[in-house]
Image 1 (cartoon, rainbow, N blue to C red):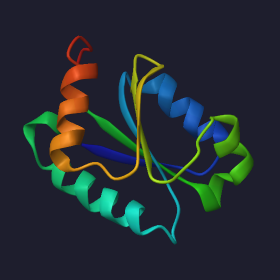
Image 2 (cartoon, rainbow, N blue to C red; image 1 turned 135 degrees about the horizontal axis):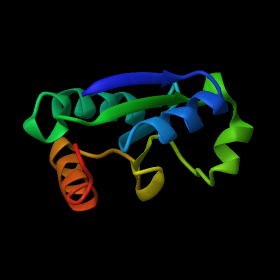
Image 3 (tube, rainbow, N blue to C red; image 1 turned 180 degrees about the vertical axis):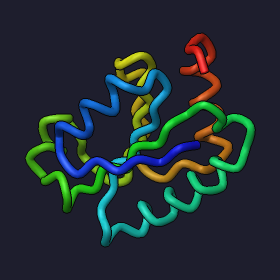
Image 4 (cartoon, helix red, strand yellow; image 1 turned 120 degrees about the vertical axis):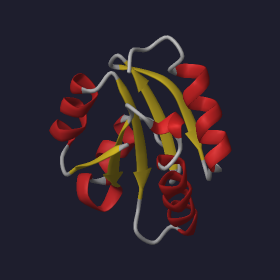
Length: 113
């Protein structure tokens, strides 16, 4: 699983347009749940389910609170799944590797790798 980092709203939108199977991790530095989700995503990345996926890390302190609000985000961490440019699911809070795999299987089953 390839990992990218968005440093601006433009980076965010470009990644959504460029990658048909995209996980977006919205996080901030001083968030214990965010660190736990990051570890979970690292573990998930080593599984066959992660093949062909791209992970986009979007840090609140970098892109700004206003951008997070325009997306309707209410908490960090939040994980979004984008299939062919459209948000297919939004998972708030910590997700285990198994929960990430289940969401990927459910929402990316029809999407090409």
